[in-house]
Image (cartoon, rainbow, N blue to C red):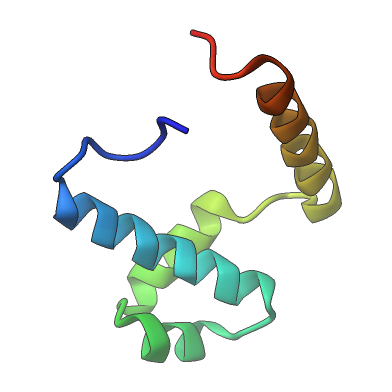
Length: 79
């Protein structure tokens, strides 16, 4: 889709995947200590990621992403 780090930037890709994993585990109901055990993040780091990226209203965020996906499928990625 064109999102994410430049091609060949393996470190950024690895870190992005770890951060995404933190959020998926949080959404699945895992506590921070479990998330840290799985991802290797420090407690403080995992807490910061969750604080910055957790949706204030998960249902509203999911609905917004659904609308974005429909828009991208309909019109593609136009700048």
